[in-house]
Length: 149
Image (cartoon, rainbow, N blue to C red; front, side, top):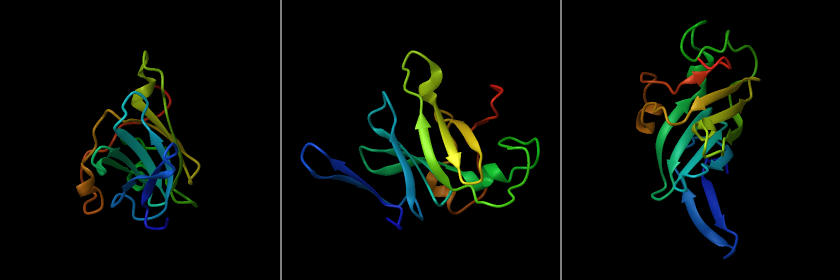
């Protein structure tokens, strides 16, 4: 819903299983359980936040701010090669690799409203989510630029 709440339904019981709250400040548009990590959920939303949740307790563990990644100066860490021109970097889709034998399960591909698709190493820990909405300081998640760097 508009509050950003994520509702998980148990399809076998046809009942509410869990609510994930207080992570997104706007519509959550993408949610994915992390393969081979049953207690981790990755979500993205219209608030331009990519969140990693601890599903066991319903709390966010880590946060990546797409607004910061899209406005990093040319050539800096997280640079996407220029300033945003039209659409904000809302998250429309998230995909996580599932091959347990390779490193693909470490990465999340994030499709954004500004036309960028960025790849994050979700094992690289950015700042905790408590800092995400209050401060623009902190360590960012790594952004791959397609060259493996």
